[in-house]
Amino acid sequence: MQNLKKYLLLDSGLVVGYTLENAQLKLNKLKKDTENNPLFGEEYFAENPKLWEVRFDNSYPNVIYDKELKLYRCWYQTFVSDEASEETPLAERGEKEYIVKSSRMTALCYAESKDGVKWEKPNLNLVKFKGSKDNNIVLMHAHGAGIMLDEQELDPKKRYKLVSKLEFSPNLHYMVVVFSEDGIHFDEPIPWKKWNPAADSHNFPFRDPKTGKYAVITRTWANNVRLSAITFSDDFINWSEPKEILRGDGFEDQIYSMPVISYADIYLGFASMYHEGDTLNENYDKVDLELKFSANLEQWDSVCKGDYLIERGGGVYPQNADFDASCIFTAAPIIEDDKIWFYYMGGNGNHTGFRESSLARGYIKKDQFAYYTNKREGIPAKISTVSFQTYDDEIYILADIPENGYIKVAVGTKYGNAYSDFGQEDISLVQVSDGKYKLEFNKKSILDLGNSPVAFKFEIENAKLYGIEGSIQQHYLKY
Image 1 (cartoon, one colour):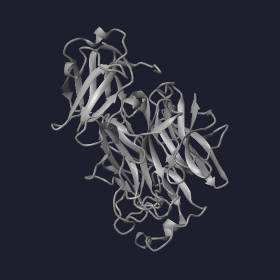
Image 2 (tube, rainbow, N blue to C red):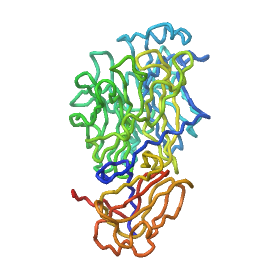
Image 3 (spheres, helix red, strand yellow):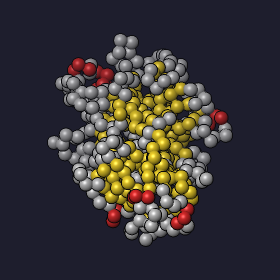
């Protein structure tokens, strides 16, 4: 038996667009943990104030589960100095304009949790702030810091890796990397030898599993709009020139930041989309989270453009806004059993105005980012995949099929009809677990087709088809 390989149909490279009939790709929405959200927030005006938590702003959360420590760990940015926020009590923020001054200063802070729900901000005694080290500050002047836990690193002192812009003033700022054994005590920052991108957003580091290289998704600007760029490194110290990989659509949909993960042999990006361009729009000066995908990290496409993975909360700031009514910035998700957990910073007010931000969480079920279903009610959707090579009969579909719905499967050529003995009437679906069905070939083994390329032909009504998994390999033919 071959290793099972998973393919998510949100990847348009797996679907033959010419054959689609009444089919639509829809995004699954995050299920928020309403029982526990928000998990923690700013405490500048708390009864026992944390004077360095003046304004979380976007905060760019980095949330990692450390298996050795059995801890959820969160590194988040805060403004430790912001005159407008310091001088304006919460009750007065609806009456005043938020004015940014160049004296604002950022820092990276740390929190931890045993269960992902109850969080503590431990006194680290590392950084002196206003005469005291009783705080949870890890690194001063860090702007858009990204943290990764490198489980392949052989040097224990470099187990945790950090990349950030160090910003001392509008005219003095540069990129650095920093290493740590425990994620709290970091070595001296090492400046980049070359390149100094704007990087005024989440600088997200990771190791590309396909190449072994390190990569950082950062932010640059062009023609007065924000866009995403990528840079690569073999050693996490020497970086390539940042290269643009994704931009939105004019002023109204700009890429603000984008953590990414490798999943099912593609890359998924969780892009915070900033909206300006029309002050009359409902979403003006707000930030939504859109799902992107890529096969190679350098060319990206949208999944359900204009639809959002995490729905913003309701209400209007400051009267009755939910904690996440206006701005969403997520950490890379954490996969646990059958759930994919997102820890995100939600802001209750507009991006350029007064707002308070809080960490929250929610999940989607494993593999269920987006699905195909029928567009018009009462008419089934028809979908054909590209060609695959098959190695045995162990093939599954990833789907949700309610009692009033169905999915039928046939096997044939991607443009033609089903092969003899592999029509819909010849293939049954047997549920093996929640969201997973095995294809049972009733007449012949799939191996009887020999080396013939195999396309899966689906008919769907009132059901959700997420992907395919099995002893299969995409067959790369242009025609």
